[in-house]
Length: 445
Ligand code: PLP
Image 1 (cartoon, rainbow, N blue to C red):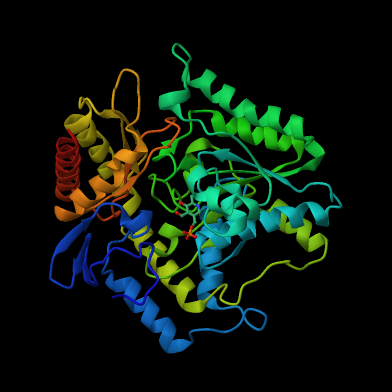
Image 2 (cartoon, rainbow, N blue to C red):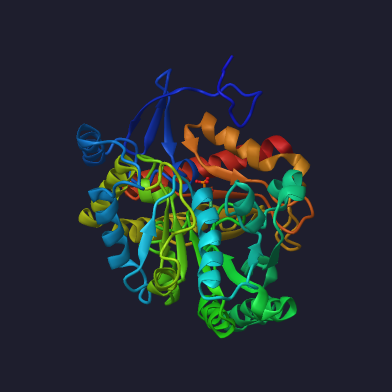
């Protein structure tokens, strides 16, 4: 029996005993091809020697010095690295480092509130986000998220956050509507909601540039974020981009918003930042936000004991240097195209595959009972967990998520292979995934 409080108290998990490139190995020597990076985390695979050396060197130097006394070189260098590569418009901003994506989202929301207070705009306290979305599991981040199932048990504890529909092309784009029309219609939902709530009361709009686990790697239609940016500016509202999952190269560019041609006021990063070698997240604030604080109280009204942890920032810095030096984003784009093409070739005509979507090495397959009506499988069927189990049997780690009980969304399987993936590994991923899906569907007949 395990004394660790795992997510499932009734499942016995294998014990991980090693990692080799894109593979994890358990206590019995079974090898698992990690096609999802756990949860879009392990972008460098599991045994990068340069990152290990950087972590060791930092521990040998100094592991921890509290941030009310000291800064440290890796935290400073990583901040310079990120700011220099951030989407145009970020300016000479600043970066804070919490320990997880949820903490980063909490910090982002508080930073947005502080920005308005510093400017004397005290009435601005409302947040608008999208549904579906996932922004983390702590109470503030959970409140921002539009994930009905995860919110439900904690609903009485959650702050009031308004949600507009996310731009879910497969089910929401009208027949005959162009992509540009769809983008505008969905973005204008924000304008309407702001006007309903009273623009002077709204502090921030939160969105994932490519929606991750809650919707299966859903990019926004072209022009959507440009219009969102205009609306936020028009109403004096901060735009918070949650790039915790889609950021740090996952979509083929370091920041997912680069592809939309705009910058957010506050950006959160996590998973690919430390690639699993270090528990680390980042909150990047543009010069506009930083200046309001510098010209106001001069103090950040937030902090965590372990923020800017020297070993974590050294690990993340090493990860980012490897990605850049080895030109891994080129590989993300090439292998991403290969992955997409292979998914279409192998599963595109399958009667239970409704949609294949994503960007870079961030792709998902949505499964439906009927392609014409787009009717999802009932949640009670347990399709997603069954595919997960079948894939694990075959030695493949993928990330299936259940659909919505009200039938507005099907089960999907999310793939987020490492940026070091070879062409052969991508082919193996698609072959094993197709086998896992087909075996599971056959068992359900
Ligand atoms: N935001 C997004 C988009 C995520 O996908 C996640 C985690 O999956 C989070 C925030 C929360 O991150 P963490 O699990 O590190 O707290």
